[in-house]
Image (tube, rainbow, N blue to C red; front, side):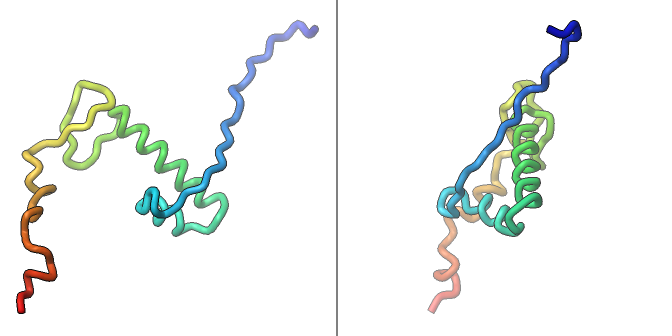
Length: 97
């Protein structure tokens, strides 16, 4: 036994996963921009970390209301810009015969 106590680091987390475009198209398209390897892994790491910061309330999304509750997301306004045009005719129908 040695007399020195060594602080051990937490073990690494290694992830191996498959992602099909049908599951999460936006994420798939974003990651597909990069060739396999370090850049793709780095982008996934950045997206995951930024998402965690938003979820915990450290970062705010544009238009996101201030909230005292950690992890909650609220938005200023009535959301009209989100639903604007929801009940309009389809684009194909607007041109008419």
